[in-house]
Length: 276
Image (cartoon, helix red, strand yellow):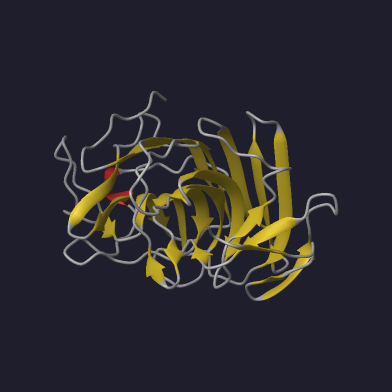
């Protein structure tokens, strides 16, 4: 079973001290060794791209052509200059597996073409003989900081809402809420990344320095999202697939008709786009 360290409400976050912590009544848990990492470019797939560019890569039942491929990410990412992102998603349900498998659903800034990353999301794993669900935030190079499951519970099908915003003074505010279970969490952290990408991602997290086997998470819905306070205008070339052991294991849909959301599904088949 994965071990978790209890930490005080003031912790070291990547690059600086926690400037505004959760209330004292809501201590966090630091997940040891579980990192939602920057994108690893998959061999044999397309690499970096700018918004509206990128060709080939990935397949899918609909013959979709995505802009990039990765061994740990799938979903949508945009490059440019970003000071804020929002996203909503439904927590997927993981299926049993023979060994331990892992998946994370999150929004973030940076990490697409650099090693910086500020993010928040939910974990959906099958480990220690059962499914495990929890919420977290993270700033690389630190590992996940888990939110206390007793005070911030997460279950399959929950509707999550998140935002990350630059405060303009060297700090960023991370907010995450579970509207199904009626809780909200906010923390303000020092962060000095360039804000060069914004993303909505289903990930196979990194454990012990290695990308984990992706959990069979079924399907996750990301909808709607914004960047810099406006519609992200997603296009197919912003999308990317996950390839592990030469197999495509996670595939996003085409963007929905109002270009602010998508579905992503376990496997190589392209799922249907969500209703706007």
